[in-house]
Image (tube, rainbow, N blue to C red):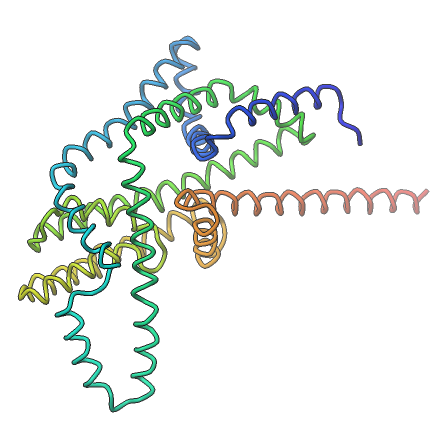
Length: 358
């Protein structure tokens, strides 16, 4: 079926905007996700105030919601960042290799289990790959995160674009919906169901990944402070950054710190921090994350984890959000296809029955 003139014009307009905004795909995607989540708030503001006032209030709210966490981060972490980054650079210079006294202790451990050849071979193979894998993960996360924060001008520019895009998306949500319905040639009710599925998925991601990661980082910071770790806020921030990584998560931060405390003679602090990480920090991840994610996306937790891992592998850190969102979109598309197939079958059976009756 050939597109109508209206469809063609809408597609040309969309292509023009995409070409203009193509250098900022991640900012555009995150703005669209945030607009989907905050659209109900904007609609409530528009119901109580004039349209221009509602847009201004929404932009102020979004700006405040972005600047307050950044300000708190600067106040808590920046005073500790210099020493923390210096220590981390030392680890990076050594390619995240273990300190010599740690290696000596591991050699003694290997010697004690040498009587089981199969176990010795297994441990050797695991240790040969574990250091490289974990080192690459931590180095990638930290380098990208602090590299982003370090580019002050670029960060401010992207923040301005994010706020602007999000405000425009919510202000013109009805027009965007109308254009999408016309281009895709689908019913308005179907588009509404797609938007609702994305809203639920984004809410689950926000609660299950971002909020849980911040809670885990906060708990790690408390544990580090009580255990006597230097720069606890810095290491808590680092734990927040790695918390969304499935399976390992915050253990990438608190486990090496536990080992450091143990080998420096602080055995009680090391055991206490390990218990805190296993029970409190990991407990939140094991209980709340699956609960929130499955409340937004109706599928198994294994599929959700795979979508996160695949999203991170193909898109980087933004894949934490894009993976589950694309999964929710695919599931909704399959659901809509099944519903259409069922409706067509009912109509076909009804028409055939009527023809046979006549």
